[in-house]
Length: 420
Image 1 (cartoon, rainbow, N blue to C red):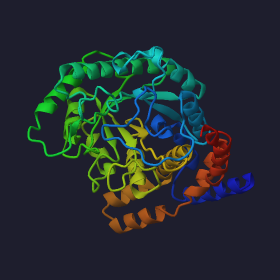
Image 2 (image 1 turned 120 degrees about the horizontal axis):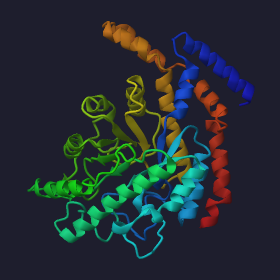
Image 3 (image 1 turned 90 degrees about the vertical axis):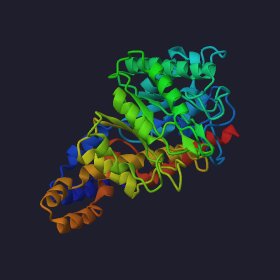
Image 4 (image 1 turned 30 degrees about the vertical axis):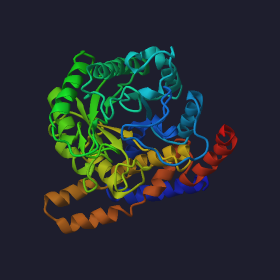
């Protein structure tokens, strides 16, 4: 598609949307400033670089597509390529297991900013901020399926120290990048089968979290979140940090509650939860994923639930109260393409929300004109989103959707195939 066609398409779309009282230029300006936090772990199937060979703790990645990065430099090369194909503001969401150790004898309870300084230098060159996650899985010091709720005090202390260190590292990320760093806590602790004592492990978890958050660290620079889960593989019977535990803990301690789109019952939708949570919390964090029957973290597609999530955030003007991160990993396809497709879809859904005549839909609803409401809801689906998206990509010097794969295929040929 040539530039004149893109511009003409944009003019047509702008005219149509203007009739719906939508300011397209304002929408594009707003879209460009919404940060999306890009998960590092899509790039290497959640393996990380702290010498742990096998995934554990309910984590699994399926597929064996060619070109998996063998070291940090190769992962960074892949991230850089993906970023070059994604329009809009991005942050890099890093797990602690992606450490670049300053001393190979260090373990997770003694990581410091020196072990992540090269990551800061990397993201600053890309004009990105950073978010961070302690890694409470895939480690010899997991007590079976337990970390912060282990009854072994030595093991539990190890993981408590890891959590403390990650908050300190997050503070340095924020100071050096000039942007707040969200530190998200997800623990896979639980039992495979039916649990008799549902209190004991939660008491240990509560004590561990209290000890981690006892240190006063500026929450404006390092907002911390706790993420719940329904279950994990091998931990189907009882999850220590379930929805009620995580939400209650965050509410009591003024932390961010992290909603993961795949961490609830298959019939639950997180889009329906956001407004309820924000009545009682200042902010929440969000992991955009796609579950297929269970928490399988499929590549995010532009489906109804993704759109409903972004509609909730945009239509209620909650962009400063909901922190959006992506969380998916697929080793069955080109990993860079997975990043690009998934994150661009998040940006497309945000654009669709910004371009929707939601004020008119809301007015119909308040006036109990439900017929006009549903008519406009359905008409909204046919408004010219694609033409505006193409112009947005053109304006940001980014490829259109149909131009992405030629670039990725070339990178695969010149870079990924050489890793075999």
